[in-house]
Structures are given as C-alpha cells and as structure tokens.
Length: 560
Image (cartoon, rainbow, N blue to C red; front, side, top):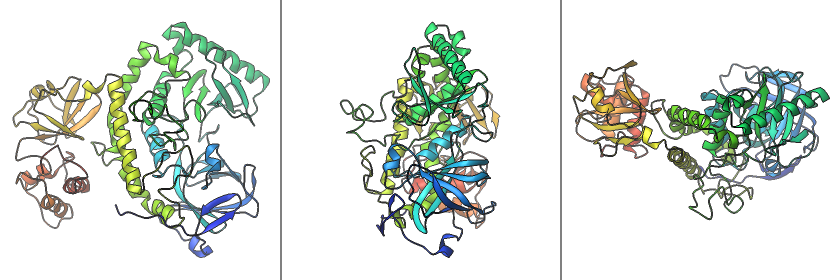
C-alpha cells in the first residue's frame, strides 16, 4: 500500500468545529464517489444542543439508494471526551423516520469521527466481528465522507443510535423492557440508579422517561438478579441472565480490551425478563490505542509494558459470573469455537482475506481523503487519552494488527486454551498462520490427528475424512475451533506451483495467468497452486502467493 502523507490545507473555525478542510464547489460535493456522502448545511452555531440544519445523503457511485434531502433536520455535537476533539462527532435528527442507505427507518443517526483513532477502522472491526458472531443488535454502519457548509470534514462512520426500535434494539419500552448503560460519571438528561449489592451505577437509556411503575419493577428485578449472582446457585443465575449473549459480549469487550468498559458506553438490555449483554459501542480507545501516561494500569506501565496483557473487562456483572465454573467453561468453549473468526481479524485464514486488509482496501479512497484532502494529521496527538500515534498510516495499522494477534495469544494462554489449538511441539509439523506443513505423504487421518492435543477432524472438499483415509494436500484440519490448511509432501508444498522447491515470483505469475485464462496449469500444478484448498484456482490463491513473495505473508512456513 502506498504511503500517503497528511497535508494541512486550510484552518477554519465554523459552527464550533475546529478542523482542516478544503472547500469545494456544490457540483463537486454532489458527485458520487466510492462511498456515500453526507452533506450538512446550517446557519447556526453547532454545539451540544440541537439546532436546525439541512441534511443531504448521496449514495456511493453505483449505489441503489435514492438521494435523501431533509431541509428540516437537526444537528448537535455528540460524545463525551470525543466532543472536545478537533474533528467533531455529531448526532443528526431527521424531521421524520428515514431509511438511510438501507439501514432501517429511524429519525436519529450518529456520525462518528474517530478523531483519536488513526487507522479509522477500530469501530468498524468491532461492529463487524460482533455481528459475525451473532451478538444481537450490533449497530449498522456505513463509511461516509462528510461535508459541512461546503467544507470537507473527512471520513466518518454513519451509524445507528443505540435506542429502542424495531430495526435497532427491539424492546418494548412501554412495558418492562429497558436499555441500561454503565455510566460512572455523567449526571444529566437520564434517570440513574446504583445497584444495591455490586454498586454498579447505571443510566436508563430506554425508556427515556420511565414511569414510576416501570422504575419500581426495574429496581426489584435488578435486586433479584444480583441476589441470584451472589447466591452461588448457577440455576438461579440462569433465570435472570442470558448467558450466551453475556459470554459473546464479554469476549468482544475483553478481546479488544475496551478502555471505557467500567466508565461508560457499556450497555445491557432487559428483554423477556432477562438481562442481555450489548449492544457494543465506542471502541476508538481500545486495542492498545490509549495513553500510557493516562491509562497506566491498562498499559501495564509498572510491569511488562505490554497493553495486550491483563484481563480488563472482568468487572460489573461479569466479575461474579466469571466466578461460576460453568460460566467460565462455556466462555472458554466459545472462545475456542470463535478462533477462526478472531484470527481472521488480523491474518488470512480459511475464512478468507483478513478483516483489516479487506476493510482498508474497501475504504482506502475515503481514508486517504481524510488525511490528504481534509488534512487530518496521522502523527499528531489530538487527545491526552490516545496513544501517541506512529508517523505513518501503515505503521498504525501494523500496531493494531500485531496487538490483536498478541491479545488473542495472551487470552488463549491466560485461559489455558493454547494447547488446544497448537500442534504438538515434539512433532515434525510446522504451524504458520493458517497453514500446517510437514505432513508426510501417505499419512492417514488418524495418524495426523494424534499429533494434536485438542479434539480435531479433517475435511476435504466439504466432507469429513474417515480415520483410515489418506490426508490429501490442501485438506483442512480443524482443531480446538481453529482451522488450518494442510501442506502434504515435499514437492507438493502449497504455493510452489512449478515444483522447484521455492515459492517465488514465477509461481504467482503462473497462478495469475491460469486465473485470467492466459495459460493453464497442469493438474499437479493446480494442486500446489490451490493455496486456500477450496478446489479451485482463484484470485485468493494468486494474492496469497504474491504476498508470500513480497514477504507480507508466509505460506505454510516454507523456506523461500
């Protein structure tokens, strides 16, 4: 990926917004590009109270959604610490419920600036991961370019607001169903209470103005739930907590190590008489992106200095839940089950191209405009809360990628799970990324499975192989929730298309030519070129082989 230097273009102060921006003509602004555009126009000073504005939303080039124009909208600056950033986040309200870019009809929408997060993809990564594992009511989002009074503000995340709605958090806020938010500090505009036993201060997000009957019911329910937690009787706990959602929510929080888990933005909802975890929100200060001088414990300043180490989210109701062996066992089982999803966040694996690279490739136009046209500086510190960023975009991305990998490894070790997904260190197998090499030709399934300490099985072309079957090159072994492509034999090693014992530029050119029908591989060459083991030679195989040649990935741990 090319390196793009941030260029400061024009300082302006307008409507409470302090940012570098480049003015553009109305015609240029309204021309469709690779992401949707949000165009805001107002004559009022925009701060923390709603003021009138016009909002126009234009879908991306080739998009299927019609232009939205609401000249009777409202806007305000949103957020707590982020509201003081130079690149402001906003809440916008349409005059009526509006389906925005296919995300459902609602009046209120959020524009997240990600001012303190230089990769611009942490919130997206968390939302996508939470959605992929089935965490209910994860916010929908679209990456958009935002214009404010004809000035380009940069790349934003247009998202749902966390509120009661059929297309958001589907609860009955006229009955005894609620959205609660952990809020240790704020004291305005919301009904707050502190739980009797665990002393957790919560705000009632929904309903916004609970009736006396609703409030009394909620207080009794929370008391009973906390009494169940302290009872030592897990069956009582199950009456008040939806364990599956609490586990998935805890995994999201702990994997990304959300800084604010015990201060704000951590939500639970009550539906059908149970407490559920989520939805997730506000992860710009996560995954190591926080100041070592401000968050000393988070960053293990007095210890290893590695922010990916240490449990951080074992608080609130999670602390007593984790004291129950049944909950901890279910958590560990689920974490192993999700290993393919977790690894795919930072590394290519059987799922496909990793999420970080795929996201950056998809939204690179908007990301680059954020720094090159809107003028936001990659190396500048915008808040005392954020980590001092690296000087280039690529370095900040690699910090995020490496941090996630280290965090996953640490959690596996902390929970005693690493032996379930690793090969036997005494064996002749080599595990690298999502490949395992060193499998000898003629090895049976049972012989190979004996080399793994965790439960494992082998698949080929969608079918599970029997114990006496011979392990084929390109088959997949799933062990402890993680999956690996198997490289069998010597000359047949994956990626070495021409069988000369090395994976080089010639191999990816051969794969590319076959994919584009410029020339064709033999059956033996196709076996070696099928890097992802899906039975076809496709673009993914070509990309992986090319990345190996350029030292951005290692196929099967083979020598180059």
